[in-house]
Image (spheres, rainbow, N blue to C red):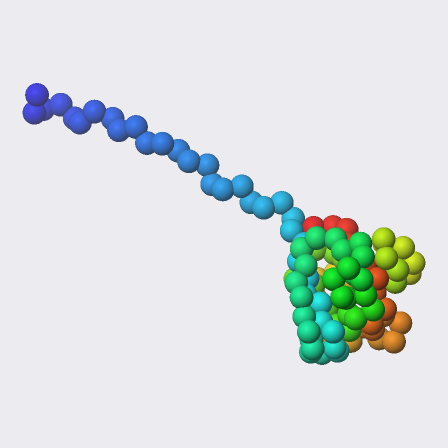
Length: 106
């Protein structure tokens, strides 16, 4: 009948996509001031010698997460912790001295 309102419409409710749990990402550079060869990492690197980065990191850009760098492979030796930020110079103690690194907090 013309005097009746249209039937109710069914609308599907779609949940928004889940926000990604914390992520970890950094860029490493072979020279100070973000120069030279570079690479991006999103996961731990227990042996930088396997990919040619053993004792080669001179500057770092931490895009997300908190990262620990270790002077030796397999997350051993001295430790340096870097929060998100740009590190153009790692200083004499850490320039070209990292053997492994891992994200410790997304």
